[in-house]
Image 1: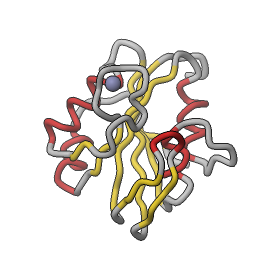
Image 2: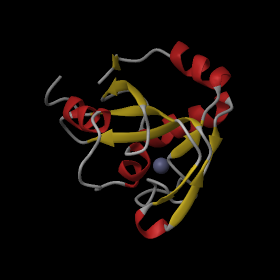
Image 3: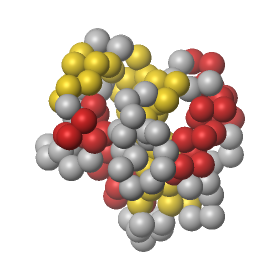
Length: 137
Ligand SMILES: [Zn+2]
């Protein structure tokens, strides 16, 4: 799927609470636990997700700043024709994930945020939604 377009939910676990500097958003507080970040790749979906699944040395996107402190990561992907990143955000909200940190990853759309705090219940519900694959580091 090297040149495939698509969307993804990056799931990452922060082991301890932390204040993290996130670009123009400034210093943000994060509780320990799982986070879900929705994103899209215009092409090279697997490369983009692969980049998120390794610890990024350069911080290009908001999520890189949080991801740098996380200890477990995996991702669900949808090839083009699946839900958009913004639709994935609405799906996460409907499943009970909590939208956090306004503007996080959503500079280019009208969503409040593309980052969610997600507990076990919504996480299990998310895994039940048909997707095009789960990627691990
Ligand atoms: Zn959006």
